[in-house]
Length: 283
Image 1 (tube, rainbow, N blue to C red):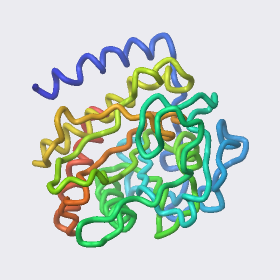
Image 2: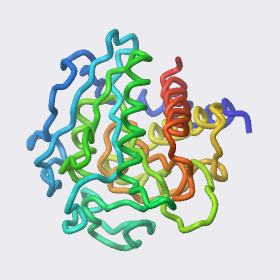
Image 3: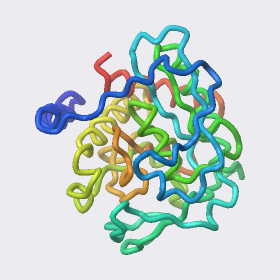
């Protein structure tokens, strides 16, 4: 299906939603100089749900921010000891509505999972960090400020802390992952869409259409850059990230353990992601 036809229904829904439920406008662009550490503020909404938050994100300012936007880039995994702790799946403490890395019906999920291992033995966290660095540099060159949620091998921030920091500093939140599905071939890219069971739960009820638009835009950019797309490009999964997000937020899976993760391949993935961000913001 033509990409414009795919995103127009979602865009219309988002436009109508914004009339009745105006959202907070982020004004962080240009607020911090490059290299500024950003810590979890305990007064921020949902901050008290975090159990691992000794680390910090890092703000990067574009040479010239031509967009007025801040993109939170979250390199998946990368918190040593994160599997020893659990956090509530939802802020209202209801059970998960789908399975995933944590089973359906669970009240709590692993604070930060360790991630999968690529076929050549490379850890997912290593690859997502390198991709995040490349993506950051391309976003900066395109005129976006970037909030790097994980700026090194170990950030010591759980998934709730990463989400809450993004909510309060960035305009959208993109978490980079690769799927550990056990297949013997690379099935391609997809994003984690919002399950129906979450769409009436706060804060998801007020923002889920924007999550879908961001995800669809990223898949559109990746497809235009020649990346393989899995099925229709989405899979409905109940994620901690989605449940606590108050800004457009997506977990994007950029292949699986069989995916090419060479420098050249990551450069191409980053090009597709930037194209998706531009599409989301109408550039």
